[in-house]
Structures are given as C-alpha cells and as structure tokens.
Length: 308
Image 1 (cartoon, one colour):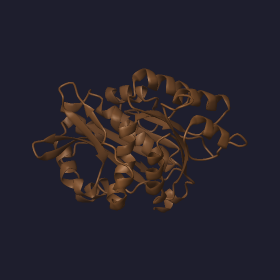
Image 2 (cartoon, helix red, strand yellow; image 1 turned 30 degrees about the horizontal axis):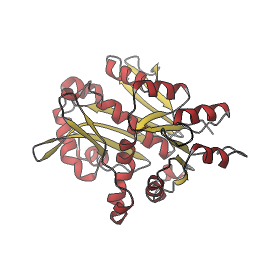
Image 3 (cartoon, one colour; image 1 turned 180 degrees about the vertical axis):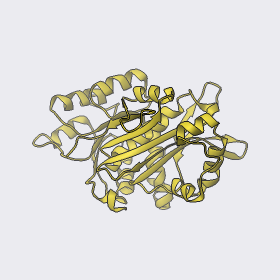
Image 4 (cartoon, one colour; image 1 turned 60 degrees about the horizontal axis):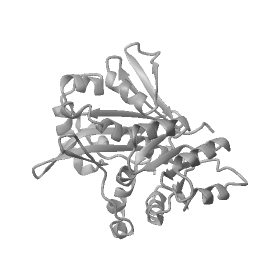
C-alpha cells in the first residue's frame, strides 16, 4: 500500500443479509488495511450505532432488506444526521431509483454484479483459494442489438488491448480524452495505466468478445492527487459504442471503488465541447463548474465523503 493511501482510516459498513458478500469483502479489503463491518438488516445497523455515529468509512446498503428497503434506511439515517457516504446496491439501477437515492444523499446506486466485478474479482487474482467463498457472475450489460459488454478491473496483461483501444479512437475522441492528438500511449504511460495500485489508483474497463478475442471498448480510471483526499478521474468509450450506457456503468463502478478507497472528492476535467461528459455528470449527480485556470475547460466533481 502506498504512503498516500495509508493516511486514510477506512471502514466499510455493509448492510446485506447475504453473509457471503461480507466475508469475501473482509478478506479482500483486509489486504488493503480496509476494515469491513457487516449487518444483516437495517435494524441491526441502527442498533449498533444508537449510542454514537460512526465517524469514518462508508456504507453499502442492499436495497432489498428484510425490515426496510435501502431508501427507507437512507431516509432514517438522514433524519438522524448520519453523514457516512452511502451507496445503494440493487439488482437493477433504474433512473428513478438513482434520482430518489441522490435526493436522500447517496453517493451512487450500483448494480450488485458491478460491485462484484470491481472488487471481488480481485479475490481470484490475489487469493486463488478464496474462489469457493463467493461465486457471482461478472457484471455485463446487454445492448439493444444483443451484444454483451463485460466490465472488469484492468490487469497488467491488458497492455495490448489497452494500446489497441487508444489507437482505435477517432481524432475527436482522442482529443477529448487526452486534450491533444496522440497516436498511442508511450511505454511508461501504458505500464502505469495497466498496473493500477488500488487504493492509490484504479481502472475499470469494458470489453466485448470478437471471435476468440477480447476487445476493450471503454475505460474509466482515477489517480489520487497531491491534494488531500482528492482523486482525478478520466473516462472514454470507443466511438462506435458511445451513447449506450457504457460510460454510466464505468463511472458508477469507479465512484464506488473510490468511495471504498477513502477518496473524499472525485473530480475530472473536460473540454468545453464535450457535451457527453456534461450529460454523464448530470446523470450521476456530479457538479459542473468553469475551470478558472483555463477557459477552454470545465470541471466535474463529486464529494464522496464529508471533510474531516
């Protein structure tokens, strides 16, 4: 774990009746000095903190709970002035559910398979013997034409598909992502991009199958900056695949991973002509402001947790 990551005192509070989720998260996040405390239902969580509010960490809430649903728990927490950054886990993240959750102060709403993808998939890589603890399908999104898009963490062996992805971007998409025209990633940048060091940095990719090959069609990544608790993110989807919900999945997964990592604020920068980023930011409750240092750029940002 990096020095910058060590300054965060992290605890993940998980309200979920499925004990397997908590067990797997405890093993994985323990490798990063992130504690996991589990609660089988909302009543148990509220009772555990009836005499004092947790002052740090983040909260994951399964929407379908036995005593009250996730939104009802969020509402109760808001009434009690809890300020933990909270994420709703659900089988299907509808627009209306997102809207209600954001209104109640949630950081995000993500589908449970996406959470399994951005965190629990790492168990199989780091601790192969742990695979029997928890088995869930990886997160996929089926597009209108039947194509299945898979979401997963980026790995060091993804250098070839990451480079091919960058080479395949149109001039416009390339410029919107990198703010300049590049034909391919330099070797040192490619190595850094494909070797994220969670929780200091993280990358989530979207891929499709083409015959026997896996092709990358999108990526979202963040990197902790020198500013306390701030991480800068970037996201890009290949031209052919834009406008089909892929960017929403990527940024939702990235936000959740950053929340678990202890990031306080997630922010990114985009050229003024990037209307797609504005639309995505509004959909996921990011703020949009002018960049004072450069009139050609705007900033999108989201506070993931209250300042200490």
